[in-house]
Amino acid sequence: MLKRNLIHFVVLAFTGGAVPFMLTACATHPTRPCSDGGDTSWTPPIKGNRQCYQVERPDGSVVNQGKYVEWHKNGNLALEGLFKEGKKDGLWIQYDDKGNRVAEKMFNNGVEVSHPGPKND
Image 1 (tube, rainbow, N blue to C red):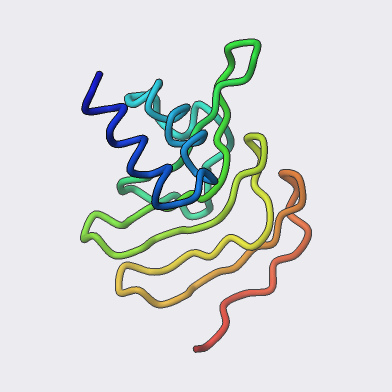
Image 2: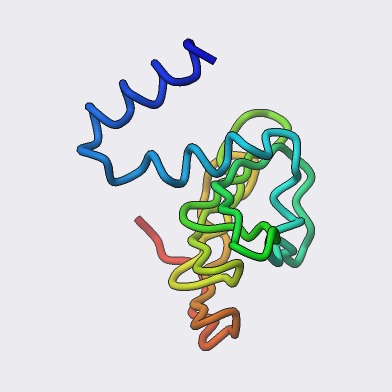
């Protein structure tokens, strides 16, 4: 418990207190998959590792909140976006296994509002 509190203290000191609530909440459910707290599906499906923050609501349910990142099996970024109260929100970007952008989708409160396609950097 001391080590966990020390980690939270370091994060608090480093971030000015903005992120620790999410980290603390996420740490209470370290083995819960991100998909239990919101829709993480994507077409075509991505098979790799994912990371997200989760918060526990007063009723005990868990939702994804904040940045969501998924990687291809080779370690390259596959998908990134944001969750707000368990719903996709803002720009979500998909990458192929070589790291090239292949799709972008804009969401508002879990509803896709545009499908602009990839942008060339």
